[in-house]
Length: 324
Image (cartoon, rainbow, N blue to C red; front, side, top):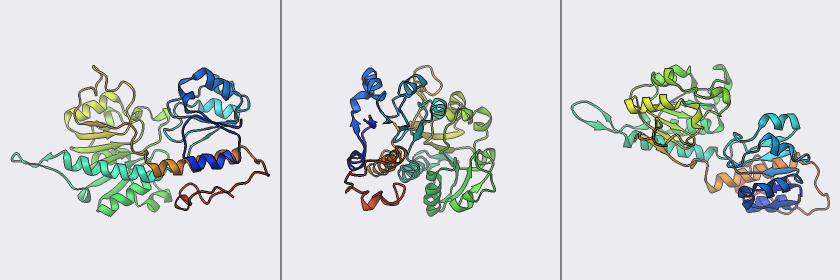
């Protein structure tokens, strides 16, 4: 067995990989850790769902392992330090869900602006239009570039911030985003969309000092892990009305439990990681994933017949043309 797959993938991508490699598919392994570990010990590559942790003990129990793949959810539960020291590649499709996420974020912005009215005086509460708003994007990702285009098409002004990207970088201009300091972004934007990749050094980045400076009646959409926020500071900003409403597409376990700061905040809307979960995004991601795994594993059986290719609709979206 070369490739152990626990997370279901697009069938045509699996068929293509199965013609090149010895593939074992078994989603039930996600709830059977003993059997999973026994099979992992014989695998050269594995694809696991975001619910499965790949810690040092597990990774080192598979001496032949060369790659860990994940379709979505980020590498948060994969021990990256152990992977690096053991020469194990961590593979995730880059940008496969960008279109889906940009569409989702746009829909969330429109809903929050229209359905969370602001007080205009004399007892009048009204919704707002995206076309007259300033949108701040935190995190320059492939999704950010697409979102900038969509927001710009509505007539919105778009600014952005990324701690890892200098303000002089050409990427900002190419994306149509004006780079600004994070404090300025929070102070001036009507809408903030958080797309920043999570690393431990960013834990609690959006804390009390920054959230207290948010523009009044701001709405916020977050597709990143909620750990980027300080839990208590976010709750305080929502309860005070400084942030009129927030939409998180994932939330840390327990953050809504009774007694926690966010437990009874009715202006917080939470969805279970819906942004990238489209048929098209999963297909693009599956093709990108299997092609990269195949490449990492080296030369396949030269006698194998490879007739399956990436469907035309996915060429260019799954990382380029299909392999022969």
